[in-house]
Image 1: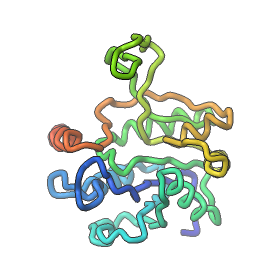
Image 2: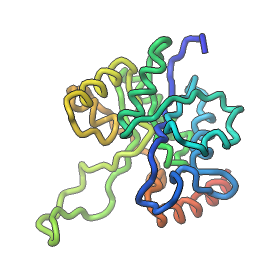
Image 3: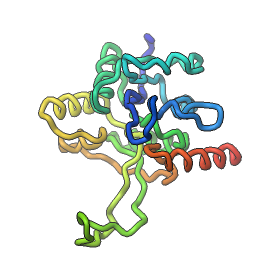
Image 4: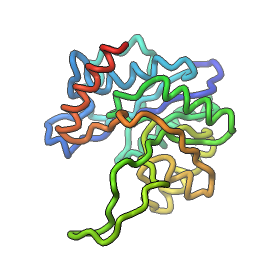
Amino acid sequence: MNKSISIAAVVPAAGVGARMGLNHPKQYLKINDKTILEHTLEKLAGVKQIDHTFVAISKDDAYFPELDIEHLGLSRVDGGKERADSVLNALKAMSANPPKWVLVHDAARPLVEPKDIEKLIAHCLSAGEGGILASKVKDTIKRGGQYSEETVPRDQLWQALTPQLFIFEELLHALDTALKSGAIITDEASAIELQGKPVRLVEGRSDNIKITTPEDHALACFLMSQQQKSS
């Protein structure tokens, strides 16, 4: 990998998916004849603007080598304890030949549409600043514990999705600084926000769901069948 890279993708895939109640990581659940991770990686491979993809995998992951993905030309890096650690490991792995931009996408979001990824890239590169795919909140939102204490206005509320796209140097610095300070980082945007940098909200499809529970997996299977029929 000696050529100049404009956009590199990172897929953090070192999680165990505890909420699925499985004896293996959730990214290896099947949707039709392929694993969730294979679907996700193939979606990214369909985006021409992405020059190379790095996948962060747990050191003791015995499932990844069994996937039929050699034709995708990926680079494997060691995953970390948390998502942010995995992404930072990937950034450090590419620092010898750094890209201009880094696009981070959840391993468990196989339903993302390449057109949405291309839309995010176009918006961010045109503005020269980072951004994320997001969908506007549709449901009524309540704040409270056991009881509803407040109805939260939703006109400016968004559900954060992935991919999330940022300038390489800015994301590397933001994640490194946040992790060293002990800040809670739930996505790349939260690290960038701590640096006072702008994060553009680019509207994407709301069916770009993250598979976290068995119910999500069942829904994803249905949605994937609909995608494949329409394509």
